[in-house]
Image 1 (cartoon, each protein chain N blue to C red):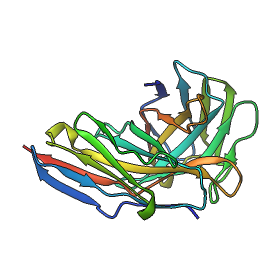
Image 2: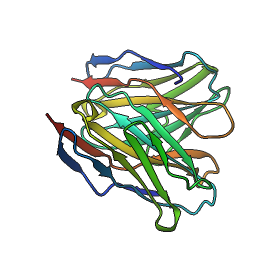
Image 3: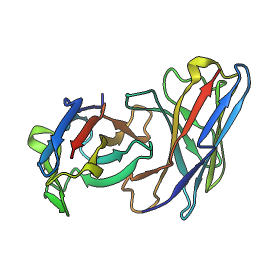
Image 4: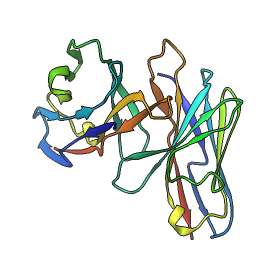
Length: 117
Length: 117
């Protein structure tokens, strides 16, 4: 069974602080993809990153960085020097083969990040 | 990134009426689109996978006759909520799978907020 766990329901930080959002997953597939999406108050999901299961290199994009650890089945997301505009709900998602043989996304429950000025 | 549109963005209807929501991929062709449902402060739950030219695949617990899906072209999928009731009130989000390289990346529409009175 597929499962994505985001244990942090809500995080509140002050602007310029660094913050890490945790994501732990379970899958039977050997080939899978992991994603992070941002959902601001407007509701639209914004694609942030995709990582395939064979690529464990960490990635940095501006203030964003991602740490993929296959040994612990984790794909954590760090925002450096957070800003008020980072306030949103962040979803971690796993793409893998479902029981029906098709591939689909399973989302975590999301982490609501509030960045206070 | 790729653009997916949804129409309408918001709809209020009376109980018993049917509502059609359109999902379009604007700058790429999508053989596969997905429909999700999101209740307030909850995660996205996959309702069905829409395949161009064939029947949709519904997730367990989703009524096929209640949520009619049509994927008439490579850029358009529609979801019709038939005989809507207040419990169908939710945020409906579609996504389109980007067709390159089997990366499973989905781009999401802005969502449709349905309120059934």
